[in-house]
Structures are given as structure tokens and as C-alpha cells.
Length: 467
Image (cartoon, rainbow, N blue to C red; front, side):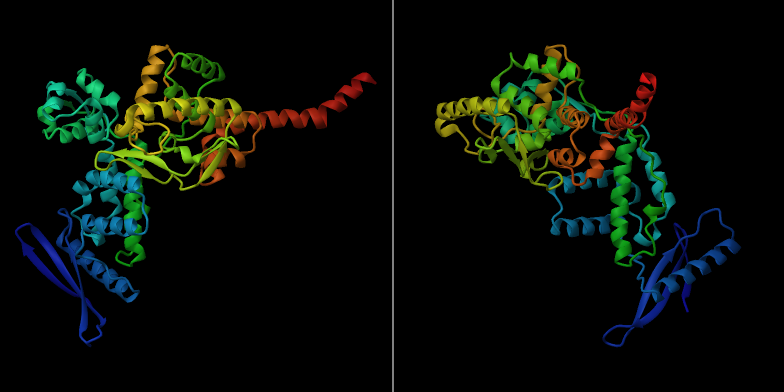
């Protein structure tokens, strides 16, 4: 039988529920505790009825094997779960993303005990995340100091500062020219120069709300954490499974029309060889930008005209530039056209020439695409260059992922089977490919309908006319 003790404290009324259930190895009785606080608008009769119900449910859960955790807060348990996932091989990039999501989650529900979290707490959080002033992604910074002078005081060149900060040289150049850069890059630059970011930069905060997709990311993380608590029988149910996160409207992937691809191809002829090769590979291989940056010469098979994709370069303000497995951890060999291999061979000659010119200054990383001294390039360097490239030539907005979607769409429209396209893109399942390119599959189904009609129905009509 549960014991219920009323506590009249400074912050209001609460009830301490104690249930004795079983004995420990030494023979001592095991006591389990739960604290319950009534809502402010409840009458004494309602309070009495509800606390009896809570005590009964608590006792029943313990008999079923649950040990409702009335001590650990969500923030404490979240750290435990992420540590558990990291030991089991959670990717560094995924861990970084989870930590950034918890920065928004914990101020709202981090103080709540696991057993006290209810769907309403989460619904209130999702509503708040969708309001203005929550997003930090668009935070920008403009230099308020002479960065060249700061670099000189620290005996750093632009390339040296870029390397120490883990950002692209283009970002350093933009910052020196008093152009807006993202806040994360500004913080990394300030740290590399041993300066406070607010002293070195004028920060412009983004007051836009989070997208429904980002709010859903928060929900999925909470559901995962509470799912572990449910599996460990610390809560009787996963509150996130009963919550109502925002729905996401499906949108078609961003890809180029063939005429736009032709314009991009022609414009590339006047650009530096390195960037021509990078853009060429983005379109012909369908690789993610991190996979292109992580490509090594040892993975280029000139004899069989293919490249091996088994790693990716990523960047975070905490880790700088680092190498990781591909997004889905799939290793794939991608066949490339003869034209692409000839371009790669030409680039190989230029690369070796740069390596010879730099001598001892050169970093032997084996990456195809590097900074001037052979050090790895940050993936966002591709995005920055493509933006300038599209503006320079009056092209539609060009971004790395659009090339990936363009390749997938072209292959499917040309009749390639979904399995081979999915494998080339590195999707974990063909269902992912089908979901992304459903618009192409719908077009293909219309063609299938016409083909069936031509074969089964229309020949007969034609024969009747002849007769």
C-alpha cells in the first residue's frame, strides 16, 4: 500500500508518495519515492482524488517492473543517453547536432523529472520553438576591427588564420572586406585570434522562427531519449510518442533543368581547373559536398574509371575540419565517364606541380582538393564559391545538393532502375530514393501508361481503321 505524505512548502503544496516493493540482496526493504504537485486551479477534493490515482498508478507500475525515476531530470538523463550512444559509435557530426538541439530543449524541460514529463510539456515546447526569435542559424557578424592588423599581431596569414579557425580562406577574405559572415565562423575566427567575438565583430541576431523541419528534429531527439528511458523501465510510457509535433509539407528537391546544366557547363570553361573538377564531380558523381572534399587520390581508380567513396570531410566550430564516414556509412564505387577521368588526369598534373612548388610547406594529406598548402578544405568553401560563380555568370542559384538531385532526376528520367540510382547516391534504402524523387516516378508512370496503351490498345484500333 502506498504511503502519501502532504508537504506544505513555500512554493506550494506537494505530496511525497512512498511505495515499498521487494527487498535488496541484503534483505532490506526497497522503497521507491515519487513527488506529485497538483495544478493551482484544483480543488481540495480534486487534489485528494488525483493523488490517490497517482499513488495507485505508481504502485502498479512498480509491480509491473517499472522503477519510475523521480530523481533524474531530463537534462541529466539526456547526457547519459548521448554518452551511451557515443560509446556505441554515434557519429561525431550527429552528436554535435544533438548537443545543439539540447541547447534549446533543456532550458524548457531540462529541469523536469523524467517521470513528470507529459505530452503537454512537449507541445508547449514545440509551439515556442516555432515562434520568432528562436532561430540562431541566420545570425551574422560583420568585422568592427582591422582583421589584417589582428592577424599581423598574431603572426598569421589569411591561410594560417583559416587553418587555425577551421574555416575557408574565402570566409577570411569576406570578413576582412567587412562582409557579413555566419556567427559560427566569426566565433571560430575570434577564438583563433584570442579575442572576444563581440569585441571583434558586430553581431546581427536572426529573429526568424524555426522551420517545422527543425522543430521536428527536436521532437525526434526527445522521443529517442525518452524511448531509452522507457526501455530501461524508468518511465511507464514515452511522452513524446503522444505529443503533437508540427507536420512537414513535402517539397520537391531542388534540381536544374538540362538547359541550366548546359549553361553551368559552358560557364565553367573560364574558371580555375580545381573548381571545374569539383563542380564536374558534383554533377557526374552525385556525391555530397563533404564526400567530394573527403575524396583522396588513393581512391581514384584511373584504370577502371571510377572513384571510391568511403569518407567525408565535415566542419564544426568545436572540432574544426575532421574526417568521418559517409552519411549512411555506405562504401560505394562510382563509375565515371571518360571525359571526367581525362579532366581528373589533367588536374592530377596541376596538383603535383603545386605540391612541388610548395616543398616543405606542403601538407601530404592525399586529399584531391586542398588549400594552397595542401591542408584540407572546409566543405562550406564549395558552397561559397558556387554562390559567387552563379552570381558572376548570371546563373540560377547554384548549390552543391542541387547537382546531386539533378543527377538523380536525369538518371531516373532516362530510364535507369531505382536500385542502381539509389546505390550511386549512397542512400541506405531504395525507399529513400523513391520518396525524394516521387515527382520523377509520377512522370515515368504516365509514360508507362502510354506505353501500355500503345502495345495493348492502340494497335487494334489501327488495324480496324485499315480493315
